[in-house]
Image (cartoon, rainbow, N blue to C red; front, side, top):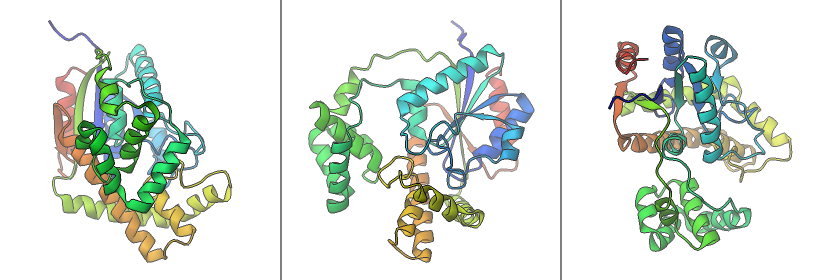
Length: 312
């Protein structure tokens, strides 16, 4: 039987791969409507460090699901799924194709697979786990998770603090493992027929150079001033998901006197490289992903061909 579901494009890639430029080009060529898949861009006042599209870029190609929340208000993958599906349906009803673009791989995964019935975040438990991570290191947390939930531990990288602490938080709050709760999740048919495109430089060294250049450009554009303004509010702290975002976390620590400027810049670039590595790891396990070299001169033509082949 032919698949009669409406089409949707998923354009994913590591940070600094050039996703925004390509998405804008696709919008201009095909009219597809853009939906951001980025856990930092959802926050207002976090523009430079999240590489949020500029006012000029948004005028060319409006992005949905940016500037949704104040940084003091956490935003979950479950909320993203609800908001993204609503946006996708509105785009479909207007006769257009949704183009989801970003690098928050957990958002992409939860969008397609659904959300398990997990306990709500527990600030007290999370504070205990953060203290344990600071005291004993992430490797010790990963070992703790492996003892109670080896299936989840095998999926979660030892250097992924958010997912590590969430898995342990779920177990301590509910007495049941994350893997058990996910196993009970009832599979559902996703209401769109998706084409998944992975955009990344074929050469890892090229990606590292792009990351370093972009972080330097963020500093020149006023990243530290942006974070200083957030810090001056007085109602934000380093435990909030928004402030834990790569770049913001290092700038916050620098402004608190944790290290000097050169070390801050080094830490920011290292953290961004680590983020890119985790994103690429996710992408390598993504089913039916079409890889496109973002540095290739015909990258846009390659993506246009893929998109047109599924009838959009």
